[in-house]
Image (tube, rainbow, N blue to C red; front, side, top):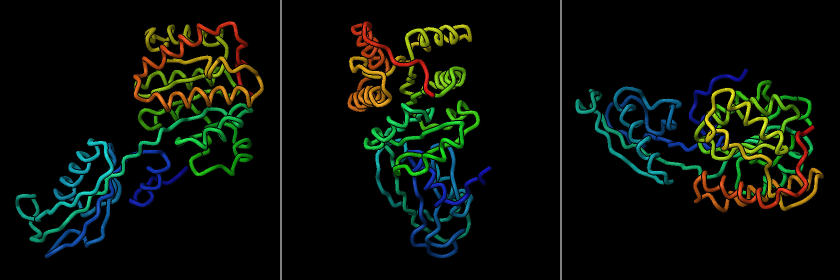
Length: 290
């Protein structure tokens, strides 16, 4: 089990790997008595902080300011002056300038579930696109054979892949293609519960998709929730069942999605359903990965 992250530099590395926005806070010039010396840093995310610039009301106000900057959704820098007086609830008598460096990560994150033949053909294509990729499987030995990956591909082993859904960045996409239908369903169920997952795709046939949507309904999901599941995935006008052919079809769909990010999720889903209805006579994709 990994140790909890405490330092700002470890947290910064994690944020970059996960495609998460953050603010790096640095104490610049200080005068008089201050809680920490110039050069001290902390990292602020929308839901947590790492390291410290001395605590107290100064850190509270700095954290509040950092999160307000994050909400502006732009990469920027700002310097603020803070006198450590009774107004701040601190009586150090000194003063400090604080540098806020806001890093907004607009790289799209996608989680690929399953490390079978199709995903092995798909990931090298996706790695050439502006995507941050998490490639997740519950078979350690298979992931070990895939150790050499581009810098934007993060291999992740999980005995229970569905539990990783909770830690995906906001507005992530997922593509499900594991070796096990029950595992597929657990991942889909966890993804549908998150309203901020922008794309939920699964390899398989129309029959498998209908079966999954029925199971979701039996578990209490509304029809509009189950309709978020896109399956079969891919640009269905691209024929062929070979792993590389299926991968190209899926990559083409994701490229369309990247180009159409200004459309709402509902508009995208309707476009894909319309496309599927036009070409239902085409050969379907295999139902599962192996």
